[in-house]
Length: 319
Image (cartoon, rainbow, N blue to C red; front, side, top):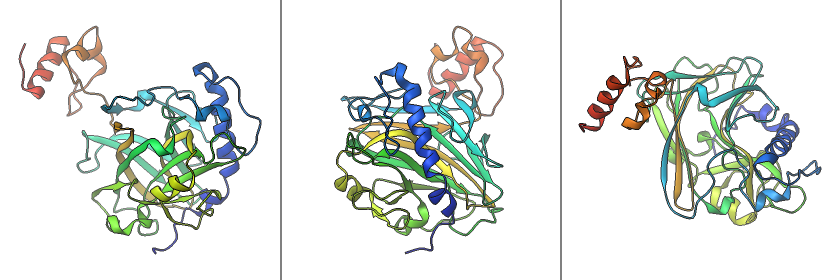
């Protein structure tokens, strides 16, 4: 087993505030379908186990695959422990920063990624998506992402951004809130963490830990497979954020992430972090849409015709 993660502060200190943020988030989402919010200080509302209460796409019985570009315009930047105001929220603590950038090197999707920095051990940055609240863990069949560790990082070797999922481990029963965490350092069978290269990690076949005691997993120091966690907690549902976290304890870590994927019952959503959006179809260029789009090299379009021509060239089609 690899050395323990240096993210010990994020494991032990802010969990109560994480829980409170999730409770507040669910209350704020009442307009999307929650009838009431629980006052239980150890678990979000039981209603989330019965319906999707996210801001955006819900799970579907028909299989589909979506590649979704996420840029700065899609994200609300908020202080840690505040309720989400958009589907995507970038939370920060102290000097932790996140930025949608070109590169580094050649990202797995598009030309960009989400760059994360935590200069000191007290800093933290988290990008959460709230579109999948209410999703049963038992229906999840894909979790993955790509990471890049900058060679200039001075953090402990092997440290990278993690995948975090805020869940209620026992559904409608009292209590059960926890955050499930996937870290590459605890998954050596998927390869050693390297500097200066993009690497892809599979959460479904991986090892996770929990910030709180739940069935089959002790808090912070038990490392358990995803399948065993789901088997031990059959009523578990997502009740808050799904996303990436670079937490306190990772002082000096400079990293990036891209291609964050969640699959549910055969459908999947792959989130492509980019500094700008590029047109995928000619319709994207219409009704002034070309003005908010960029070519892959970041240059602007002159007009709608220039945008349409670019799409035709990329897709090898013609009008």
